[in-house]
Image 1: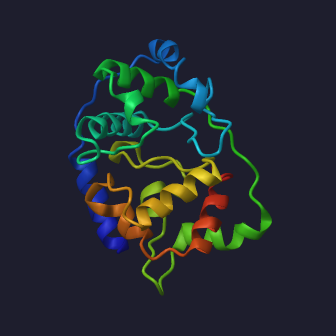
Image 2 (image 1 turned 90 degrees about the vertical axis):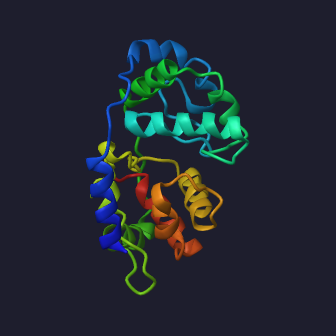
Length: 207
């Protein structure tokens, strides 16, 4: 599993094309509507809404495009979320690029990791679970949780526990399907609830 992930990452890196450069200053004014859920600087207060601050432009742009596509196709293509897809629907390419640039320019706020999750969370993140075929998260998201922007692999460090749990379960259960070649669905399919909880708590302080 690990070898397959590394090979796919290399392919994505090699085939990554140029994207429209965003204007962070323009994005700041356009983000006024987003602030209600994601906070003025991308550090959301509600743990069910993801922190966007410090996330890679490439990943943010990808998700916005897929939310828009999900709205246009009612979930047949892209990523459909009742709260986000309608918000992305009217955005132009320039709007999405500017918003991605703005949030990428902000700094994410980290939190302390609860002691009971450090050992298991760290073990899973760095080494996976060989017995059940769960790959190490470091292969795509890096040892410090900064991700891989050129391959559109997101930064994970500092993200809300509740949001991370929800997304890992969605990938595990096949409800979220906008991962390249099912990479995340394959990585998460054998995770237990306890392992997901440990990983989510571990990530809040990873940097």
